[in-house]
Amino acid sequence: MTWRAPDNLRFYIQEARLVSINLNSSQPSVDAALHALPRRYRKLRAIHPLRLALLNEYCQDWTEDFVPCVSLGEEDEDRETGERFTVPCPPFYQVPSISLARADSLKRLFTWIDLLPLETVRRAVHLLYPETKAWSFASDADDPDHTIFKCITWSQLVDHDDERHCRNAMSIFIQPPWVLSVHDLELFCKRQSFFGLSSTPWHERPTTPHERLWYKLWDCCITRSCPWFVVSTYTHWVFGVFSNGWTAAFVSPVYSHNSHDPSVIQLLLFWLCSAMGLPGGWVVPEIRIEPAYPSHHLTALVADLAVTDKSTLTL
Image 1 (cartoon, rainbow, N blue to C red):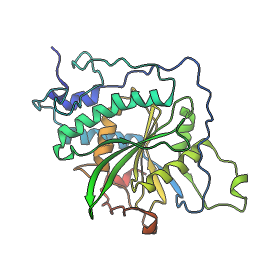
Image 2 (image 1 turned 45 degrees about the horizontal axis):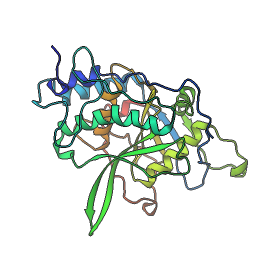
Image 3 (image 1 turned 90 degrees about the vertical axis):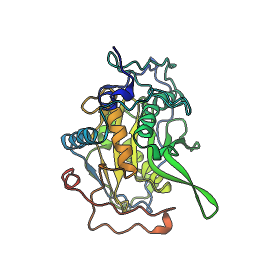
Image 4 (image 1 turned 90 degrees about the horizontal axis):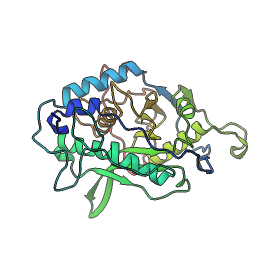
């Protein structure tokens, strides 16, 4: 006997693991350097790694408390919207496999991420919180790095002063694994400091791939007034958030696509619900000496978040 995912959603998101991606045997030839250089306007000063054991425990506890293990009485696919669970979980669940083309470009890599983890998480969050059905993943327009970098944002269109605006909660930044290596991701997640520009002219200062990625993320997130983010190559995943004043970032260790306890699906759902301020989510630790970032640089102010006992233990 096999279940539908909503028959025991908790067990499904805990056990469903991303399938191995079908990559090209030869790596595409691309210009792998992001167009992001040191600039005086960036206020990012410190990266704080989150402790693996504590983050995993928090995610597991949240899942036990807020994702039901009793049947929701729903099908895998919403007949009205077409949203569905897409990540197979044999032998327990009847979710079928999806046949996808070899990921030999960023465009095809995006298809793997969009149709598997993101579609599954979208279906899950809308089942758990029907009031969020106006929220969805929106793909951003191309930028100068469109061949090696793509951003997707979990957002909602809202009307304000007779105009439509996007309210953003979390951005997902995608780079191909042949551009962003596991080693670069591990360096990206390490404790590090960014000090102001030195006397060396910016065009003469060498930068590393993980530094350029931090520059790119800071610019993208602050432009969207969206401090919560995920970095993914599909094969590996990192979860992070900027502090309220944008001078620091808190970032998870690197998770493999087939991680377990927690799974990538579980982490994505947890991080997305945290970004939306839903009950029980992780909150951003306070940086007590951090000045507020000038509001004229933002399209909206970031709300102050309270600190829980657990969040203070993650540094």
